[in-house]
Image (spheres, rainbow, N blue to C red):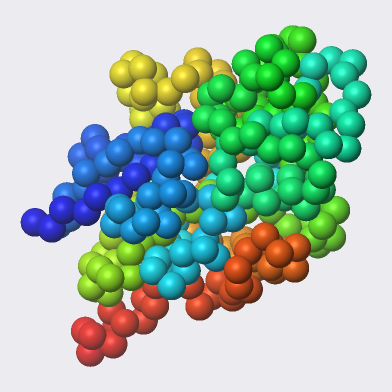
Length: 286
């Protein structure tokens, strides 16, 4: 049995979409060995080709497109919601305010830099951002993952990353946050099989949402209670996570274009050229 090294973030939607495999609910001929790491660490590992498959920010993909293909499954988009720029209540931000972001190549960092080009950026683990704002280490910070659901009462939202995105794309496209990539050096037949298994895992997870959520809570694998978990999964692990739609593909292309236009990405890409060519399987079986 081939072993595939896979990395995902420790936030609830990634865990939910992967753990149907970990719990043995998806039968397959591939053994997955997983690591749960913060998104910027995963982005950096993907840039270095450390793992076979990794969760990534869509914002990092133009930097690794030659070495990694995008998977169609396990994706997270915002639809009227997403990361939040927060500050202390009543605080006025100057143009060059200090801000904590969760990583250099995250999607929220790309969009933030377009809207606030003069801000002084400090990169921190996403779990440390709220504390950094409360202790005046920075003037503001962008909250991601489950942190957007609840934060200290002394904080308030300065801006929604979704609103910036909506103003930039002007087509009411969903906000591309996280996806998955796979090393191009893997045999194409193996890559196709991995995508099929991971897609099935998301389908199985959604079909058994209540049971899987209960098991994650019982094992203390998530950082929220049952009510917040249900709300968070409704936002980021839903039917739109199973396989990329035409609208989602259009949104990713818009993100790539904006990144290139604002000189935040090295190249402009068509996402359709970055996906695994699944027709290879049919051709091979003819």
